[in-house]
Length: 226
Ligand code: C5P
Image (cartoon, rainbow, N blue to C red):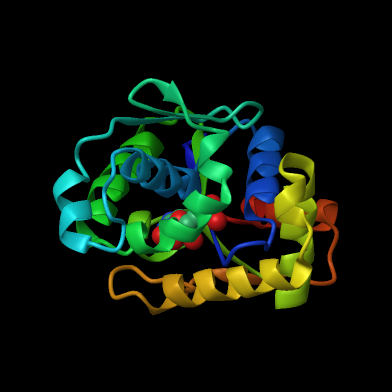
């Protein structure tokens, strides 16, 4: 069968990563976390003393870091200039800076090219998760899914996730909720490729669903597509 390309978009905390990884694993597809790529370039900017709010400085430096993503859904990897970035890209510092960096058109153009070549090279196809995959990166995807959930559910999930990684970040649910809402507003409001649902995307509200139910739903949609 031909390679199947699946685009999964939506705001933070809707279960995009967990769903995409599980679906890719079940169906033998590759997996690409595009948020990790924007986080990786942001981490590099912070490490190299670039002011992330200076769009010109960010644009000038955008081509310098070499970002490599591994697409095995069982063990996704991300490196920057050969350094393992999987841990450091999840810090609060990177999370707070990533929307500014990802809004810079030069950054988006470079990362979008990278994403398209990774998707084109995936032998059996790939599940690509992000914010602008269905509209901008892979407009010809075989299936587009847009995941949503209430702000409360998203904050609760994100705070639960953080608990496993960094106890200091998980303490304040209200702060997590505020940070999520602020980041979504920035991602939805930017000029270049804002977070948005493609007209031909299937919207799935995950507020009342378990992860297993969302996975099942997306697998069924993929089997019905193509
Ligand atoms: O998915 P995650 O929360 O890790 O994404 C981090 C950030 O990367 C988002 O808040 C957004 O600014 C940016 N992003 C983007 N386009 C994508 C994926 C992520 O702008 N396709």
